[in-house]
Image 1 (cartoon, rainbow, N blue to C red):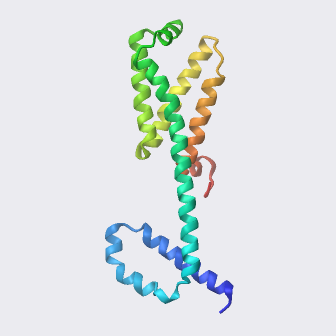
Image 2 (cartoon, rainbow, N blue to C red):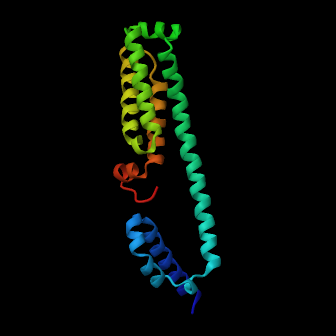
Image 3 (cartoon, rainbow, N blue to C red):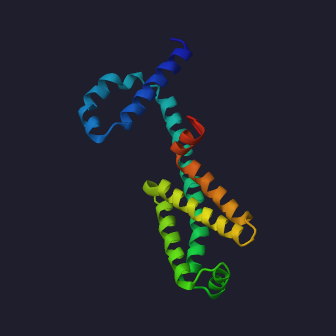
Length: 182
């Protein structure tokens, strides 16, 4: 058998194995017998399979580290901001007073910021958190524009949030840009 044919057969078997892994637990229990009929052990070229698995695990680990580092950076930025609001930092309250925001409202903004941040950090609610943090930063940009303050910092933070969200949630890039794989 030619090397190309072996590679194609191996790829077909790997694709079938990926489909098997994506099945729910109940489907897997019912199809275990079918799995061993479809994938006889002697058909696998074990050296290539393990190399592919190592590379796949290495890439998954790298992607997971990047995922959590980016999420942590957003968390630090908004966590520090919320901490200043919740502890009623005198300098921050004074600056908010210049924008026409009293101390109680400033505290409530801090609560909203913490809730949005928690929703962003949790993977299941990350998209909702992205929308809330983006809206929050949109409000910050509008307030800055209204009072004639430079808007560069809120714009950079908003852009960073959106870039992190596109990295964290591939379905966003598929919907926004029509890309299959980013």
